Structures are given as structure tokens and as C-alpha cells.
Length: 67
Image (tube, rainbow, N blue to C red):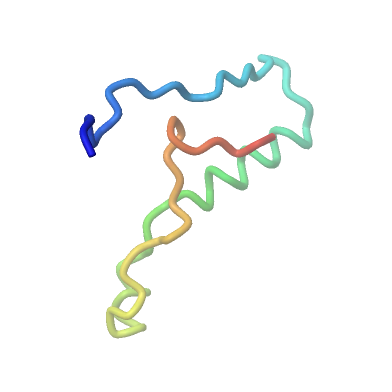
């Protein structure tokens, strides 16, 4: 099998977000922003390092919310 293992171009879905958002859309964006953070260090200490990272972490360019 020949070919490049890694894709050189990445086309993200272009989703246009209006500058004047509805309150419901703004709430969803705020919730997603709050959820998108690493696991606190005290959680790692409390769980004896069984919880190491946030599996639901999302990158703004790679994964879209679908709003």
C-alpha cells in the first residue's frame, strides 16, 4: 500500500456563526467552553492518578459542536 500516511490538507467544515447570537446558542457555547478544560490536579491526587486526562477534550478547529 503506497501513499502518504498523513494527510497534508485538512478541510474543516466551514460553519458560519452570526455575530448576533441567540441566548440559547450563547449558553451552549459557554457550556462547551467550560467543559473543555484539563482535569484538575487535585482530582488526579484524589483518584490516585487513575483519572489522568479529560477524554472529552475538544479542539476548536478539529471537532465542531454541531450547533
